[in-house]
Length: 99
Image 1 (tube, rainbow, N blue to C red):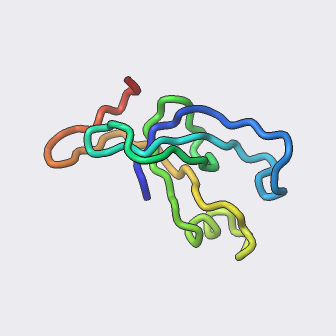
Image 2 (image 1 turned 135 degrees about the vertical axis):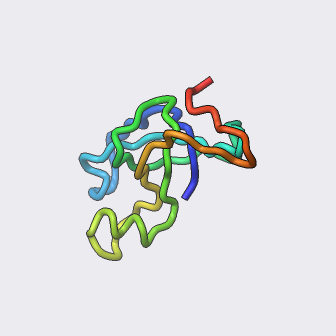
């Protein structure tokens, strides 16, 4: 799992049938002080997140398949599964509000 900041929605007109009715968001992983770390990626939203939210993203295929309960043919790897209300790393709080 990764802690990420939601960058915003992604709109597609043509997509795999598994994505029908699902909200896609662009997310940016953050480090221990809330700064961007690494590359942004897409995640299916199962938590009703919005731009600027700090979220918990499941980034492992088997876990995603269990959430969607559709077997082994799921082309989804990243799923937003919750919000981060507080995170402390080495005694320092990660900023929850987007800067």
